[in-house]
Image (cartoon, rainbow, N blue to C red; front, side):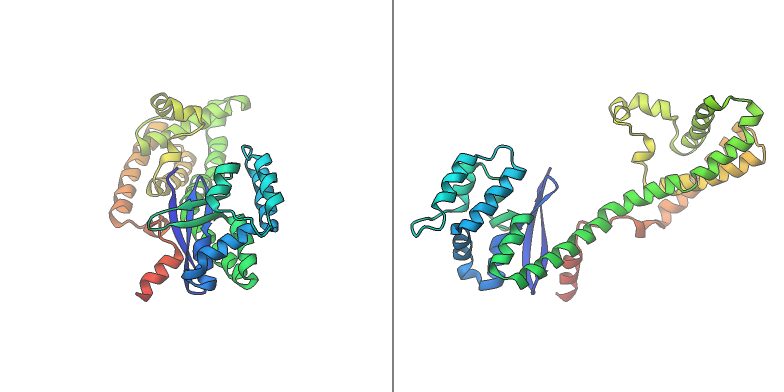
Length: 296
């Protein structure tokens, strides 16, 4: 997974966050700069690493989260920690113990980064007040990300399921009695009706899609999982419309023709006007980044 750099503002100071494999690593260098200034940031991190309590915390975190952590080397550092001659760098800690909670980056966003759990502990060491502001801004970032990344999924889930009960009730009441299908075979009727909608909107049946996408089918995915928001908006409308057509006793062929025309018309309107744009994720930018753009 590609790493991403994001930012939060803590007391008007930008703190970089390096995200990879669904884990966030906060820049300790930026945190130290925010507290004591750029000239002393490296010394603050070194002094923090020399502390026995810090070594015990780091080691315990690694034991919990890192199966490849070298406990013997950790015990050696723990015995030496606190002594006047004890000096430890991030690179030494990582190389000798196989630690994953701390890392160093070079380049534009370079510095010492720590897993968020460790970064919050570092925040306590430099200033409990600063730590509280850091946590608050980090939570704001995650809430903003949740709104951006999950909204589309939520809309898909809602649109595909909101009218399901209306649709299946209409099938039970108006098709099953006519076809005289046993209750155990109801799923066959539902699947047939689902394919009326699938072909009207997507142009193929669920089975045809699965044959064409065997790996995705093995993962229990279907064509609706890959539909756009506009398609799912139309699908929701078609489900309601189909239930009404069923109640009016139109044949399956008549309903298909009507549903297909409706699907084409509604998709054309939505795609042209982009009426659902407000529901789509617009960019990777965070709330803080957008605020900074407005100030500049």
